[in-house]
Image 1 (tube, rainbow, N blue to C red):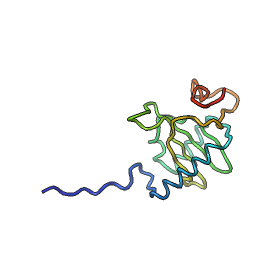
Image 2: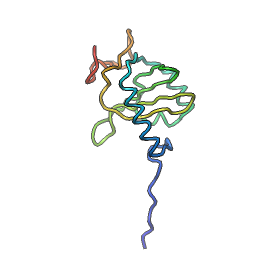
Image 3: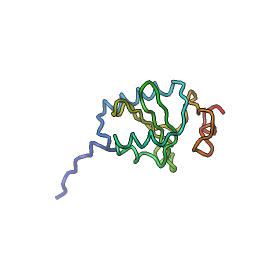
Image 4: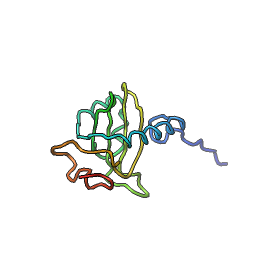
Length: 133
């Protein structure tokens, strides 16, 4: 006789409800519209990982970080992306040591720019669709 298997409720390890997932998606849509100067700050990611250790599981490297209105924004890049793999980037926003928003996305938002100076990503986001040089 086969035993019924209960579906997992926590698919990614962040323990969010469906309501929280929708709220994060809405918040990310708002974040995409803001003009942000991104840079690469490895220490910002390390501080975030001490609060939420699972962040390191989302992506292969930290692509960009920003401090926005008291929040730490982090974008992680996946080396293997596109169907059937997840989108290229994972976005996280932390506020007061808790996750405020999280989302996967494929195309770099038009409003997001790099600060002047050298960047860790060899080609930088200027080669991504929608970004300005």
